[in-house]
Length: 220
Image (tube, rainbow, N blue to C red):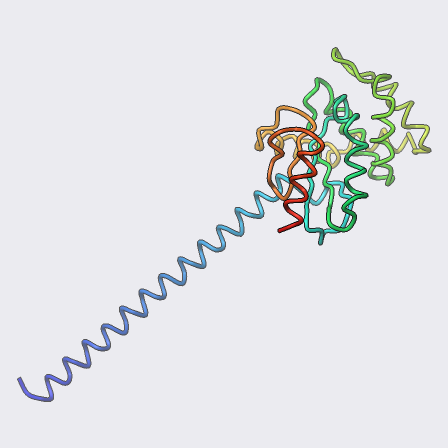
């Protein structure tokens, strides 16, 4: 074998090695990119279980803590715990954002959720929710809910009731509640209120336990 042939063979080997290395790193790069894109997509999908664009929020999006409450408007525990949630919001101020999601576990509660969702069209959701909690015993029942009583109660807020009745029929409004129900089922929620702090479920229900979980996230 001539010296020239030997040099040519070495050159071919070097080029082959460079090509193989390039292919290896190319595959690795695209695999990494693919995995990254999948992770981002999964993260976005997971985040929807806690907050959707339609979700009612109190507090800044930049808050350190996202407190998600899945509630049933007919739930006695939700009504009793609501004032404590308001105290938590005052205590932590800009460090927390509350996200309210529907979990209508009581029979017929999805109709109440639709009514409350419709009040958003008149910027009266929180007022309607608190009014429904305050007079819960007047309209909520284990064998069924008295929708007329609830409508009469929230009408005292000065709502345009004709518009509200029309908005309740809207597929857009009903779809929001259905999406919350779907997310509730994916999370396996079987009781209300159910709380999540930065995606972490409150394992043992209780005011102090909730505050401890929030504080641990703020301290990070």
